[in-house]
Structures are given as C-alpha cells and as structure tokens.
Length: 531
View (cartoon, rainbow, N blue to C red):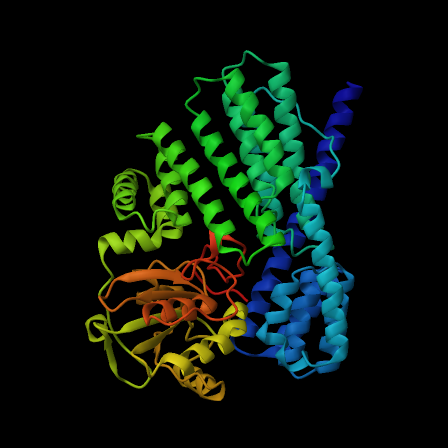
C-alpha cells in the first residue's frame, strides 16, 4: 500500500500545483485582456495600472516590462518608460528589430539611455541567434517519457507546448524560447528511444515523421519567428536518411522529404544572407537549384498533398518566371491540388500568390479613397499601379515609410500611380484620426480606408497575409510581382526602361530574394491586429 499512497500524494500535490498555476494563468490572461482594451481606448493610465498588477503577479517577465514601457511612453511618463524598458532588457527581452521600430516608443527613442538599452536588447537577440544555430544542442536532454505508441508521445508534448503558448509569456520569467526547445528535444529523444525499443512496431514510420516535424518546429519556438538553421537541417537529414533506409515504402516518406528540403533551403538562405546579399547570380543560382529540387519532389508525389506543397515552394522561388510554358504547367498542377486539399490551398495563396493571380487574372475592384474619389482597376489601364498594403500600427511599415515617400515623390508624375491600402481597425484609429495621421506624416498618395483591419476587401481579394506588402500591377492590368518598398523602385525603373538604382541589394526586383529573411507584421489567428 505504501507505493500507492506515495503515488496518490504525488498526484494530489501535482494537482494542487497545476490548479494554482491554472488560476494564476487565468488571472494573468484577464489582466492582459484588460491591458489590451485600455490601449485600444488609448486610456494609457489604466493600461499602466493593469500592467503593474500583472508585474506583481509575474515578476521578472520581459514581455510585461516591455509592454509597460510602451504604455508609459504613450502616457507621457518618459522617465518611468525608460526605466521599464531597461528592466525588460535586463530580464532578457531580445526582439531588437521590433523594439527599434515600435511606434509606441517613438517619444523616448531619442534618449541616449534608450539607445544604450537597445544595444542590450540587440545583444540579447545575438545570444538567441547563436542558440538558433542548433537549438537542439542549446538545451539539455533527458526527461524522456516511455509510451506505448508514437501518438502518445506526440500528444503528451503537444499538450505541454499548447500550455506554454497559452500562458507561458505571461507568468513569471519564463524562458519561453528555451522551454519550447526543451520540450521539442525531449519529444525527439523520446521518439528515438521508442524507435530503438520497438523496431518492428507498425507506427515506426509515424515516429520518424514526428521526429522530422519536431526538428522543423525547432526553428520557430514560442514568441519567436525565425528560419531553419544549418544545425537543425543537418539533424533532420540524418533522420530522413534513416527513415528512407528503414521504411522505404512508407507513404509518409514524401512528407518527411518535403519538410527536410524546406528546412535545407531556408538554412541555405540564412547562410547566403549572412555572407553576400549583393550578388544577384548567387541568389538566382540558389533559387534555381532548390526550385528544381522541389519540382522533382512534386513529380515523385503526384496525386498527394506533398505534390501541391512542393509546387508552392517551387513557384515561390520564381525560377520559372522566364519560362512561361513551364510556369503555366506548374500552376495548372497546383490549382488541381488546391481543389482537393485545404492545406495546399492555404499554402498556395501564401507562397505562390503572384503566379496564381497572373493565371486567374487581377481581382477587379471599385473602392473609395479617403477624399471620396472612386478608384477602379480599369481606370489604371495603360499605367503602372503600386498597391501598398500597410498600417500605422505596423512597425516595419513605419520603418519603410520614408523609402515609399521617396519612390512616390520620384515617380508619381511619370505615369506611375500609388494606392495605399490601410489595414486599420476603426476601434483603434477612426477615419478622421487616420487622415490626420497621414497629413501629419506627409503621406501624399491616395488611401483606401475601411476600418476593418485584415478584413479589408482588397486585402482579401489579393490574399494579403502580412504587412508591409506591395503588389505591382503593370500597364496591361496584370499582377507583375510582390515585394516591399525597396523593390518598388526596382520594378518601376525596369518598367520605365530606366537603369536600376545604384544601391542594388538583389537581382530580384519584385520578390524577396530566394525567400530571404524579412520582418513583417502578420495577422494572429483571430484576425485582429497585434502590436
């Protein structure tokens, strides 16, 4: 009976701990919701008070300190805002690029202490980046669970990660990146022990695929969005090769190959991006090399989901842009898979938007700008049109605003027209306030404001999933490409027969080179804006 008693006591103690933590999590989520509501109403004093409660509940949390700095800066409490920002850096806040572009911190950005603090945040980011070289190795192993099937192992760690995503960033000084990495490493190690201990089990292929998926997840831990890295790609390669040797006839094998190829491509992008971004031939060669490999994988997976996913990646790389017959064939195959699989359809509009819109035709639109003038697609026939999808709450959008102004000032009188598509929420920034903002910041091109955020009709028509995004429409009314503010000048100059700008960072004027690193604001799952 003694062992049973010990087990019962352990269960009761564990239950009490989980219950207490669950109660804290619910209270933290309530406070966080109150804080968000206060910021929406621009009641910054209430937001500060709520965040101080959250800080007492979760001391040492870098995200709470950072949010407090933003609220205090908006409230005009600049000294306290700087102190809170310094505390966030001390606690490990590492989103340096976001912090340097956050409009909420604009009022204190000129202070020397803020510059010093941003240096600390940048160093924190560098340490995270170093760990990102091989996150599996960056955390300790051990703690494997023994289960009767691969499904049980995956479900166990899925619950752990779901709990972490639910309230991990709200309670205490949680090292959410490392915690997520630790869960994933333990899942991988547990699956490895399961395969070694049950080599003849029917679900061994599922275990291999789950290992590959866990490695694919390692480069996107909680609270971070990064790219696959050489260390993770190399570990994935070993698992896929073993999978091919042990289960050569498994129908799951193409999915594992696709995940590895995607990770290998992104790892190659990271390596090239860190060494030389100015050689257009290098980017073109990388795109061609991996584009052909994705097509080969699609050819090996005809009729399966993997075919559609691989075609999305191949078209995204743009290596068929100068081969219209080949591109037309690939798009036709992709459209067939899109009709049969929702995941492929979602991936296609994210990765292969331009070739799809070129095949299906530019979406017609008739909208009214903030000056009351009607804007129709047919009105721009014979002219070049730049559609700029952006928002005032988007840090990267504001960072690119000076460059977009420069391009507009230089070309808007030469047969080039610009339309701003503002993904604003009227509850946060009404139409009058938006027009006042544009006037104050000298945004001179027409703006299409609906106050519906990501549900803006043009954002839906053009399948926009991140801002800033710029869509280029040529004189024939066809979608010519997609890019950012820096690529607008490249495209316009090419269409007007002008030489490229002196400072050319890529050989691809209308797309991010080879899918390289970018910083965009993306809609969360509920479709509302995020700061």
